[in-house]
Amino acid sequence: MFAVTVTQGDQVTRESFTGFSGHGDVDVAVTDLYGVLDDEPAFVPAAVSLGDTLRRLGRDREAGRAWLRAARLQPLPVLLARIEALYRELAQPDKVVALYRRLRTRGPSGARTLRLARFLLEQGAVEEASSVLSSTPEAGDGVEDALLRGEIERRRQNPSAALESLRVAFDAWPEDKRPHLCSACGRGVAGWLARCPGCNGWHVLYPADEPPTAPPPAPSMAAPKAAA
Image (cartoon, rainbow, N blue to C red):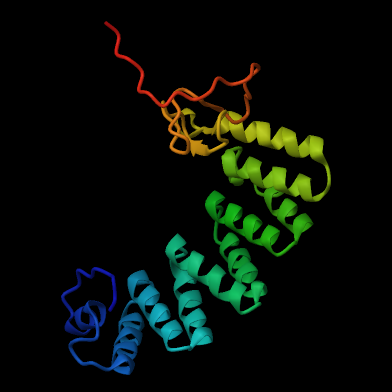
């Protein structure tokens, strides 16, 4: 069953995306999806569904070719994530790197630059990841950029530079998403909460980059009383 909504009126397209119940033959569905992509090569829902179906059939390399063709036209995250996962599994990371490098020649994209740097780090290519970030101003000074730079410095065994990058990341983090830790149980959450979801203690969360200066009080399990 395909989980993609299609608004086109074409009958073949509609059958291909509502599932196999109309014809009961997965090979016919694959053929239909190829037909859709012949007419609209950049139609991402068809490419996603085709690749997912081919993978279920064990035709992984064919799925990769379908996704790569579509990603060169419409490099959306839903395709890029599948391509990364597939070629990581097939031990062919060069396919992913080649795609990102090709896309970079078409124009800047901070999001894709960060994806490439993160993927290179996963492969252990620390200096190459650093070069990608340093040579691409559009990667920006945001949270993920700083976290990646911190990881690069950690792998270089440069703890002071790594800590500085982490400080930059915390400073850039939106206040409502800033990581907090529970002083009682150590649970981490994104953003401040009055009550810890781990130990149910009240008012025991603090910003992860600002540890409490005094020993934390034992968490209270009772809800705070409303003001009179």
